[in-house]
Image 1 (cartoon, one colour):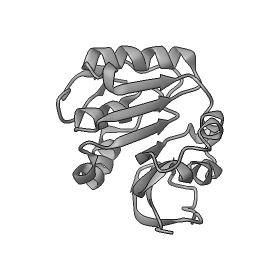
Image 2 (tube, rainbow, N blue to C red):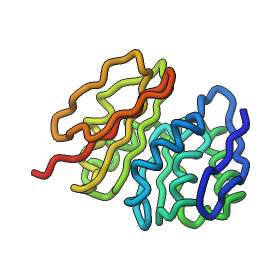
Image 3 (tube, rainbow, N blue to C red):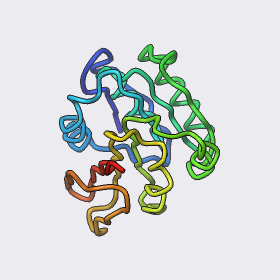
Length: 181
């Protein structure tokens, strides 16, 4: 599968894709970024289950200031680093080869760091509990963007409100906004 950056500074740059990953389709990625585009500039993003890094790199290309990529697979992390070097975004990124759950646990004491948290798990590992575990890292006006199979029901999460939901074929993306406390 060919994967390209869709817009911004690195537009049309081809990205490597690790085997055993399922990149988001261009249609779904374009729809997702059209919803959040006005808030991307200068944002700080956490890309959990980063795979190739394509979502975080797309955000950097569109003006995000920093992305933390979390991916358990070391080979995939090397591909993320290659893709970052190719797009010249390495200095704006941090790549962690660690399970998402452990990353969130290690950052338990840190509050309200991220404007966006992307949670695009492998379908066979989809678990909405990770959303609840990541809320503490989200800024008050921030969004958690969660992908699931469209056949799975959308779930309400305490502390968050659903502000948008999009389905494209077998993929559904839900946008959760943090409720002000």
